[in-house]
Amino acid sequence: MPDHEIKCPHCGKSFTIDEAGYADILKQVRDEEFANALHERMEAFEKAKVTEIALAESKVRESLQQSASQYEAEIATLKASVANNDTLQQLAIKNALAAVEKERDEAKSALQEEKLQGTIAQQELSNTLKSQIKSLDDEIVRLNEMRAKQSTKMVGESLEQHCEFQFESLRATAFPHAYFEKDNDASEGNKGDYIFRDLSESGVESVSIMFEMKNEIDTTKAKKKNADFFAKLDKDRNDKGCEYAILVSLLEPESELYNSGIVDVSHRYPKMYVIRPQFFIPMITLLRNASQNALGYKAELALVKSQNVDVTNFETELENFKSAFSRNYDLASRKFQDAVKQIDDAIKDLQKVKESLIGSERQLRLASDKANDVTIKKLTRNNPTMAQKFDEVVPVVE
Image 1 (cartoon, helix red, strand yellow):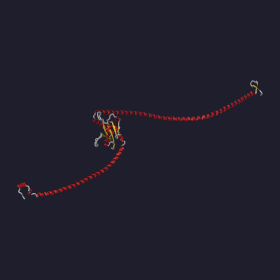
Image 2 (cartoon, rainbow, N blue to C red):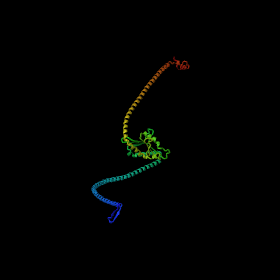
Image 3 (cartoon, rainbow, N blue to C red):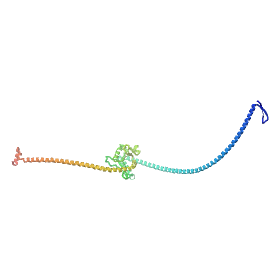
Image 4 (cartoon, helix red, strand yellow):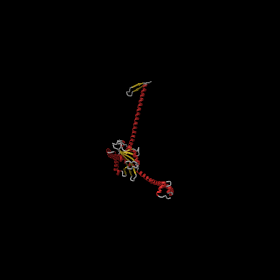
């Protein structure tokens, strides 16, 4: 393998290398040239790329500037529109807010007014209830004191007078067409205490109540219970044609049931209630007002009943006439038959009298004949004593 002489271009010194070293240096030279060429090519590419990038950037910048201008114009338009919309929206919001605030203020004012009125009404109601409770308490105390001071009879009479006074004090204003009077009709064998009836202006009865008043003093040994009077009260109500039955009672004073208010005992007897005296007027008012709703129907029913009564009365009078005529005919017929029979009997009796008279006449004739045939001689025959007597008085005439 031949050696190669190489001179250094920098120092001018020559040196010899073998084939392998030469090949290696040659390779290094070639690699360096390639690297230089590659570097140059890369630099050229980089320059071209920079140029293209700059150009592209310029184009993009220009395009972006145009787009930005367009966008800015659109943004300005949108901003103007938004500003206009904001103004309108703010105006609408302001108007709506003003309306809401006005409603709020009105509601707040109304609420405050209602609270004020509610407070006033509550205070008035509280005062009214307190007044009523005090009145009821005073009435209870008064009744208890009165009951403690009076006899049993006086207590009962005072309870009736109390209810009657309560009714009379309100008759002109609350019950102008009603009456509340003692039950004095004992035709059915017994009677209640009081009857209440309320009529409409046309005279139709709207409600009727049979009242029984019961009370007893604390010293009474035989303590009665309210239930002891239910049966009689129900019978009185039915006998007198009343719709309701109410027992006004001070019996069983310790009973929570009867002290609680109006007690409905219609589970035992229909439309029957037990109340304390302080509920007398409220109970009448309650039943009267409830019956007012059915007053129109009652008026129509009364009209229908009156029409039916007219027809019924006519039919009844006709039947009564037919019955009376038939009864009178039967009576007259029986009397006629009796008269005929009496006449027949009288004829028979007269015939017997006639026969008796005829028999008597015959006997009288025989007696007369016998009397004519009597002589002194015949009378003294076989009777010497009588003959001697006649001879002494008168001579014997033959």
